[in-house]
Structure formats: structure tokens, C-alpha cells
Amino acid sequence: MAETFVELADTLVDDFDLIDFLHLLAARSVELLKVDAAGLLLVDHQGQLRVIAASTEQARMVELFELQNDEGPCLECYRTGAAVTVPDLSAAAPRWPRFALAAREAGFAAVHALPMRLRDEVIGALNLFHTKPGALDRSAADVGQAMADVATIGLLQERSVRRQETLAEQLQGALNSRVLIEQAKGVLAERLRVDMAQAFNALRGYARHHNALLLTIAGTVVSGPLSEEAIDQLRAFARRSA
Image (cartoon, rainbow, N blue to C red; front, side, top):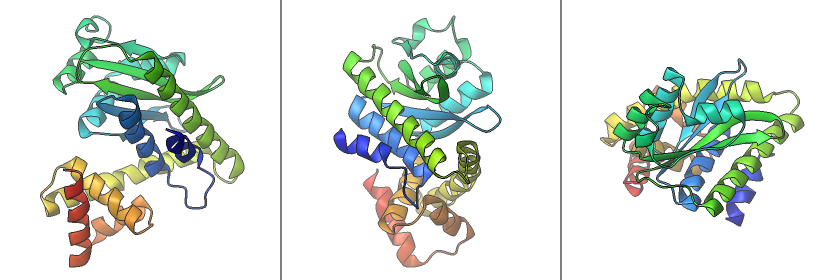
């Protein structure tokens, strides 16, 4: 846990990778909070929430559905700045009929949203999903909120130190980068004959192994062609996550 908080606070580096940082937050949330999936929404420079990271494709699709239909716990969490907990989605149909149905069809039975907030400034929300009904343990909720808070402070501090860039510009850049990464995932999924989650893990593993930015590797995959050695390494990283 201590290592995770150090990682989330370490944003003041020259090669800070926002996409990888936020995926780290989602992944560590699953590992430490004993949830089945996590998704992350952040606000862009126009004040619109965007899906930036998710631990699984199912969580990402549910988050996209939530935004497209303008209903769900993450949206409410962002708008109020307060945590929202739904121990049983089957009972949430009157509150969020379309979201509750979509989340249950994706295999989730409970959801908890934690604000990414520093004082009065809310920049997004962290969604935690369970495949079985049940409330989020109090200690897990406290740790999860602390993780979201540290990540928020790190992002805002990074903006403050690098005055030539604003957080909004970084987030917009992340959104643009996401398009390229999704394209690379599709290319790898077809080339390696793996699912989209494995394709992303291959991209991320390869980037970390070569100490390269995730976006750089995604661009290389999309523009091609890849060497056989690169394909073998990507395939190996995909298999590790199977």
C-alpha cells in the first residue's frame, strides 16, 4: 500500500505519462480494495467528463454508457463531490434505470463512486465495481478515497509546477492519445489473436519493458510494420495477462 501511494504521488518527473498513471490508479484500486473492476472519469477543458482509464473492457464500456446516457453513480459523485455507494444494482433501477441495466448485463452487481477532489475542486471520479452485491468495506472506502485524493493532489501539483501546461490541456492530450491507443489495441488484438484487454496489457508491458511512453509504442504499432522480435515480445506480454 505504501508503494502505491508513493507511485500515485510521483508525478513530477520529466517523462510523466498521464495515461499510464491513471491506469495505475485503476489497477491498484482493484488490487488493494478487493473490487472486481475500476473505472476513472476525468473532466476535460470544456467541463465534460471523459472515460480516461479502466481496469477491464467491461468497466470501460459501462463508463461510456453512463456518460452517453447521462445517468449513474460516477456522474452523481462528480456533480456533488460526495461518495456514492450502491450495494445492490437491482435496487437502483428506479434511480438510474438505463445504467443499472447496462451494468448488470456487464456482470456487475454493485458499484461505488469516489470523488477525485481537492477541497472544493472536483476533477473526476473513481468507480469501483463488484460482481456480487454488497457494501464497500469501510476501511476499503477510506483507502480508496485516500488513493483518489493523493492522485488528485499529484495531478494538480504537476499542473502547478509545469506552468506552461494546464491540467485541462494534459487531459485533452490524454483524450487524443486514447484514440491512438484504442487503434493500437485493435491492431494487436487482430495480429496476436487476443482480446482487447490482453492487447492493452501487451502495449503497456512492452512500453514499460523498453522504458518508452505508451503513446509512442501505440504509434509504432499503428504505423507499423513491427519486427518479428517486437511481435514476439508483445505476444509474451499478452500471454502473461491471460
